[in-house]
Image (cartoon, rainbow, N blue to C red; front, side):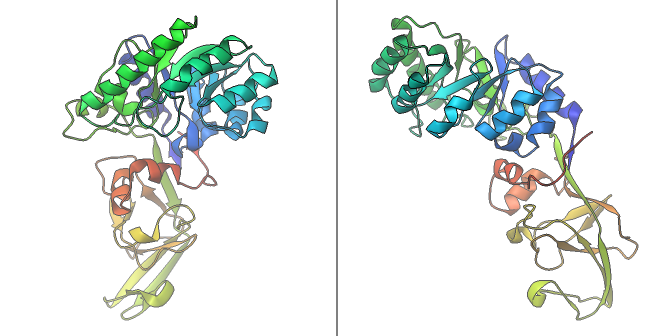
Length: 360
């Protein structure tokens, strides 16, 4: 796998240019959206983001070694884990009273961002519990540094749905202010919400999929062109490890589902299967490429192998592109997502973590 360093840096700087002075918070959860957490941190180190966002303690252990940024832990952790976070580097998103009460018992000066339920109804402090939440914070060592939420309709061009969440956020933010807190960081936008339109009330924006070069907006969205300036960062490569010469009526792969119909053919095999997330359901639809030549699937994708119909001249060791970072070619991430009836987010995060990531 190759990571285009210039693309990632370019995406960050482009998003920063749209932020009107607000902070851009790179979202690095789920192994940096499948790109490789350690490697993405190494690229971001030169940019020195003020804060990055992750999900879990294992991710935290990597990020604190690679970056000097503040680390926002967005995921809920088991209560026994919180004592292991360093308050000097860590900011905790807190979603409920029980987690807050546990943090208070630890006696550490944790900085928190209160996560508000503004309408997604998945998690977050509800308005009826906010007074009690603030009261507990005020009588503890907890420092309320920020307020955050998450958009349910960030990619939707019906901005009234987004605005409704903005409005609920501001109402709840006023309640927090009434208790004497002055949170400096206020953020709700994901990549889609950020590209569609910014409310200057918010002082930071969390960008995930856009950072990695994917436009979350549909072509019918009036802000679609903003996202088209982004450049995909990841491409996946492999090498031919076996070449078989076969003849008419030979069968290839499990259950012999692929039958050779020409007088002779060449089958090339690569060490990339459904363990690496080349899904079996995409077998008949997904072509990889060797240079300009498409290599269609020949039989079922195996656990760690995929067989391809190739030209007679292909050799062992030939480099092939499994998934391209070029949106104009057939075997790109969006096309693979479509073949698998899913979204590009899922394809990215499910690329096996044991595949070596190389920064280029």
